Picture 1 (cartoon, one colour):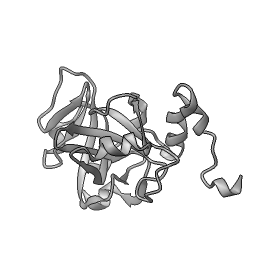
Picture 2 (tube, helix red, strand yellow):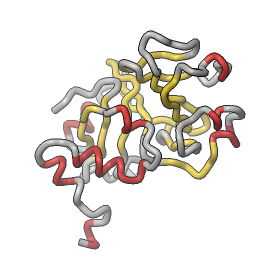
Picture 3 (tube, helix red, strand yellow):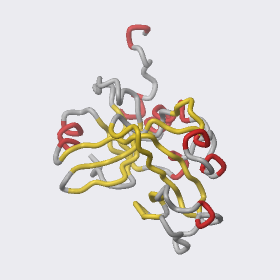
Length: 185
């Protein structure tokens, strides 16, 4: 089993029945002794970023909608971004792993121009208390797998869950072919 750490993906297993996380892919942004925090990558909303955060709609990757990052603090937003170059870090950017990081949404957009390769904004986040995530992984609710750069900014995240599983070795790849509703099988 791969260690859960910032920059890794959590992929919901068929055993995870919580409707907040069924068939989700979560990007971990922070993992420490106090707990873990991440955002769900494959839950776009119908709300355009520009309708909620003036000016940011022109900066985000397509689709230019808010994503449902998780059930915690849904009135707040997190901006996940990738730098064009690791040595060109703009004001308001905090690295998570390599070129991946968080952008402070209070930063003037002009200060970010030319520095980012991709940006996505998430309403809310997924959070776990100390040892909670480790327990859920141990009980078989999550697979922990490496993220690839395109995972975060896909134009259409509909098949992200299946695609991430499909590229894994062994039984995980097999799970990518299961129907979303096993009763229809």
